[in-house]
Length: 215
Image (cartoon, rainbow, N blue to C red; front, side, top):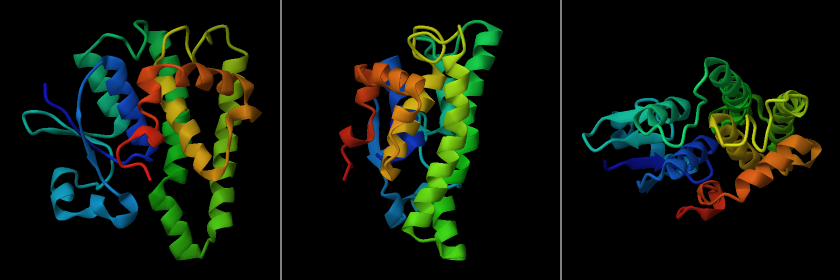
């Protein structure tokens, strides 16, 4: 299978998908888009992905998958080793819950489109945007830390001793946080799990600084 990953090095959703592909041992062609230059709004890209968002995964038959969590679940169904979602229903719900806390609570409020809108409509300056970003990260990271720290289901990683979708989202978000000088030290369980993940080649190779379009 030939895969083409349309993405941006600093996009946390792109980092998620790179990590998932690496964990599955799948090769892919890296296609970079500079979001601040509007390359993802080109006619060619919009024809492929009308939302104009990254990442998008193009398959060898020309079909295109969008939305990082949907793509990762597709990968888990089509390439089930190693599993990124547990085999049992409770485990899958737990992992999805942790992943969605990041993907559905932090990311929609802090993505580039929202930050640009805050700047354009409400004249938010750089420090205003940074404070906005830090606030919403802290609200959800506080909840994730409490969830992980007090749970017997937390192991080496967010759920047990193998990386899951929850860890993929967590790893990408910690890297995204660093754009606004947010380090995970305030959340010791998160910091420990991030350290474990960052020692794994599949994750480290997905990190923003290690991409060909990194600035």
